Length: 145
Length: 79
Image (cartoon, rainbow over all chains, first blue to last red; front, side):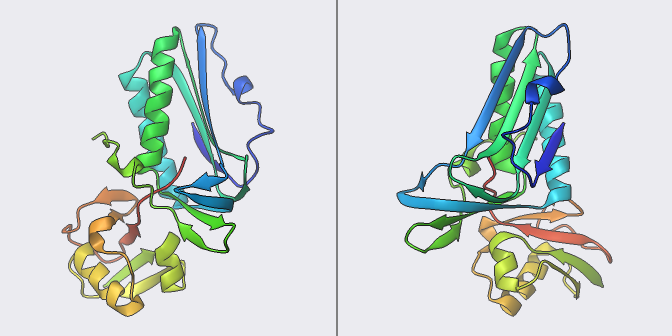
């Protein structure tokens, strides 16, 4: 399951969305807005998405994770709109029988989301400047076919 | 033919719109981007972009059909 949200993710009880008595491991990742990027002090940021395509691409990633690793389920949510320092930008949660597969699937999911899902980030800096982040590092992550 | 063009991120700012129906003779996304780049003075070189046709990542040489939805995607930065 993948969702884009205009509302804060902090209040969501993600754990309660999973229900599987066979699960013995629950691995989560939260991405937060940090106050610096590439040497500049960040005040706030805007996430924009190509929503319909983001849904399709993220769903593909989740299906890939399920086929590559011995897991039961993946939930992912990503914020859009204006965020402040410390806000949760993205959540990924994976349940599996054993921890190893959940760790691997969680990392695979967030890496692929950062590399492929059409979401863009505009940062606003303390010096009054702003700019769209082009995520040079993420573009080097190998994209699965 | 009519192509639905969607603009995001810096291309949205430079085009000054979110979307439009663009009447074009462009045979493929490569030709379409060149026309739009000239029209809006887009700063992004096509080598830095990916193209999506009808919500699927596509090749720059894919023939366009009337009614297609095309988006030129700058490097993504989610997460």
